[in-house]
Length: 304
Image 1 (cartoon, rainbow, N blue to C red):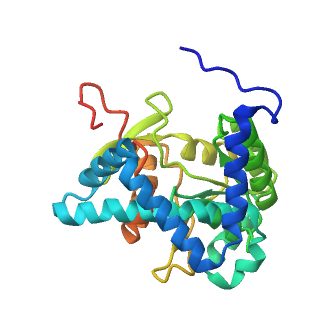
Image 2: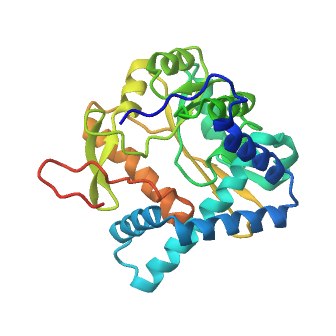
């Protein structure tokens, strides 16, 4: 059944819940820090309790990726994942609705020289990020050090899409639709830094299968393709919330050498190895709620 098109007027009652959600995000962004964390934790626990489908997906992902953990430890990690992602919702609101300058004292940036060196080559830079719960706040804080563009997935709701795009355009130079490959290439060739995250399942046609936590995962070819089309260095970037829940760390690593190599599977494997390494540092902060292993090799049974 086709979905009912959204009304043209944002005053339509169908958008009222969206307006309420946007208002709640503005409110959450300005709460005192401890209260903000408490709200985020409560949202995460509510989702853990009631979002049963997402909880099953998370349980499956963690069982696949951390088989060495016992049942009790896996259950605890599932709960911590929902809490971290609940806090991530409030962090997203903070990143979208507040000036990042007021949060400069909360972030430490390690490895800035790697990104500066890549930028100095004059070919633009492709930054490889990861879908941690801290992603949008991380982008806002990263903008304090380096201006960058971001590749994103447009939202289906036109009102929320406008709100989200305006917020990201304030943080980043440009917010580029993930389907706009020409736009990405154009911005990189113009010397810009473009940040995108290649760690989701985009289906068989866009991907090759490469190992990820010991399992074959459909891994997008685009990272190597953009590098090949632009000649730009590819720089891995990690961002996480510190254990004190009050500060953050950005860590930039040296650009991949000999990338792309010409071997699509080898290149995808290299990207996955970086992502896996980053996740293992703070596994609860990763977005395990999505079906990372949805697409399976021919003849292999699905996990979900």
